[in-house]
Picture (tube, helix red, strand yellow):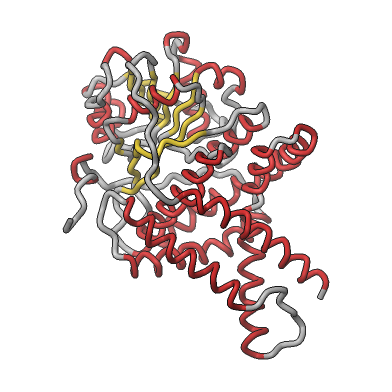
Amino acid sequence: MLLFDILQYGLLFWFAYWFIISLFGFGKARKLRNKLPEKKFVILIPAHNEEAVIGDLVANLNQMEYPKELYDVCVIADNSNDRTAEICRALGAIVLEHTSLPGEEKGKPYAIKYALEQLDMEQYDAVVVFDADNLVSLNYLQLMNNHLCAGEKLIQCYLDSKNPNDNAISLGYATSYYFMNRSWQLAKYRLGLGNAVGGTGFCVERGLLGRVGWTARSLTEDLEFTMQCLLIGERATWCHHARVYDEKPTGFKASCIQRLRWARGHWDVFFKYSLALLKRSVLRGDIRAFDGFLYLLNPGKIVIGTAASITFYIAYFTDASFVRPVLPLWVWLIFVSFNLIYIATTLRDSAQKINAVKAFISVFFVNYTYVPLFVWSLFTSGKRVWVRTEHTKSATLESMTQKVGA
């Protein structure tokens, strides 16, 4: 079938593109030269009823290895009716209490917009965003200072997990992040391509924020902001040595709700920005815009790739004549084997000890259960309902940085 052959060649191109990029993710990540602290930061933390975890983060941020006069911690108590605001004020944070008007849309993008309107932004050089359930490595602000001094304007830090070993769901999440941190984020940074902002742990220079504006309103405002920056020629960059730890879902239903929101947001951003990125890549020869376009195609690639894989196995083991694989099975098996080797390599980056066999099983389960969510989200991408993910895991940074059993 000609159509199936075309799809296979398309998948082969995408896999080859990813494979070549991922090779640059191996090895030790270098650090930028240390600069004297000079940039002043405002740290924004949107928080809706987060009394169980918000105190851990604010206390953590109060201990940063950076001059206290060069950063402010600002918590946006967003439509909260618990002790979130009280806890944060007691810990010395600036607290903005935001109550949405009747009929007004709710969610993280609107809380950030409110804070940017309320604060005197002229006194800051950069804005940092964390989620309420996070913990942050104490070197974060110093390393962001280094990147800003080097001329970078939008920086994403390493995304780690507070609870990778809770169960198969949280381990699958965490493993996929360890994998992407190297095979996609670090590799792209080394190649000079654009990175992806991950929703938390990112830093944006105030000048760039002023040029782009905070107009991202999709369910994945981080991805939307990344693409808005690419469209004006500014890429996101990567800091491998500063870390943010967040709480991964442990319930399958909760994980599906969260991932469905991400998938809907991804499709929404695809429909808004993919053609503009492709146009820029053609007219200006902008490889970073083309790379961003390919990234937005990822949900479609996953769905088609899964369908193609099932078809391959049917064809090989039943001698079906309705499909003709353009490459022998062993080539596709090499791709799978390479993934396993890469995952095993990236697990060593984790701050906690991870069982490799459990990680393999968990990440494949989480990834393959993503497929029907991507399909369903395509037909419901216009549904923009923000469903809060419950956060309950109180922890300290010290507990994150000690490998269990190491």
